[in-house]
Amino acid sequence: LVVTGPNSPNAGEVLALTNDGTSAGSGILAASISGKLADTLLAPSGKSLQELQTALDDENPHAERGFALPKVKVKLACGVEHLKDKGRDVVGYLPPVNGSDEYVLVGAHFDHLGRGGNGSLGHSGEEKEIHPGADDNASGTAWVMELAASLAQERAEHPEKFKRGVIFACWSGEEIGLIGSAAFAEHPPVPLKNIVAYVNADMVGRMRDNKLTVQGVGSSHVWRKMIEKRNVAAGFDLALQDDPYLPTDVTSLYVKNVPVLNFFTGAHEDYHRPTDTADKLNYEGLERITKFAQQI
Image (cartoon, rainbow, N blue to C red; front, top):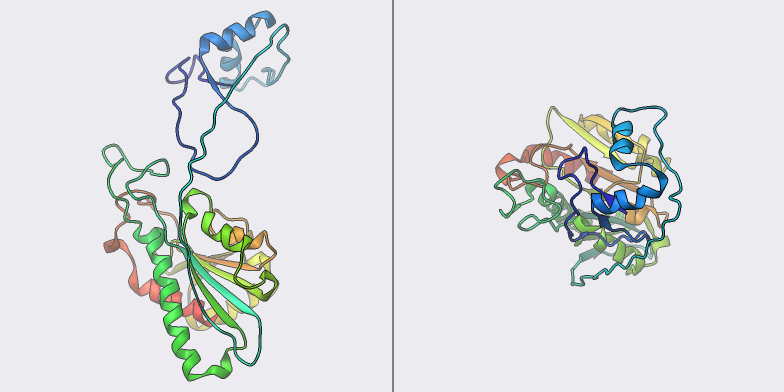
């Protein structure tokens, strides 16, 4: 039971209901209650919400952080409405040559926030404006399309280089919980054991000071050496991060034991706002990142 404490803004008020906006479920019922009801529940213990919150706010090391409520029974009913809709992943591939059945998967999410909603970080007055998502993630979508076109051309000219096939995917539903990539991972068009790696781009259009972050490097022992070798020619100021559990589509594949990489040029003040527009993209940087990814 969640209560807005007497020392907090909107003290004692019941929180408004909102759309959760994810596909996750903890299995734990939750409800907002009023300050008056909270004090009623606390009364048999001789404690008050004011005292408890004040002690916590003051960082009192002796503040009570958990205790039983004597002589209290609560009956709770919660209703959850599951909103269902359809999304579309867009998937294409270059088949392997010489009888191989292995693939590298290349992808990025193409959905964004439309006119905002729960995921928007828009400032006052921006709430219902169109969120164009130029960096998040039109930049990644363009990266996938350009890799598909350039690798198709290279394969036509030098088929002997392609010991594996390449699958290209543009995911739907990333912003509400990695829905599209998770669906692919559950129902892949080829066995997942045949996908040797997944390479993703999420927000790669705002490179500054030649800095590029590559994440998920710890998912395979071959990544670090391969990336550093290719960067000799590319010349980025690289930040390599090991953790493959990321708030983007690589997580859907990594939990299925597929090695992953994610390219990222960093957060900025236009993230999830209507101001994430195409005129702010670093197109030269995006081209360099795409060529770097193609070499990897």
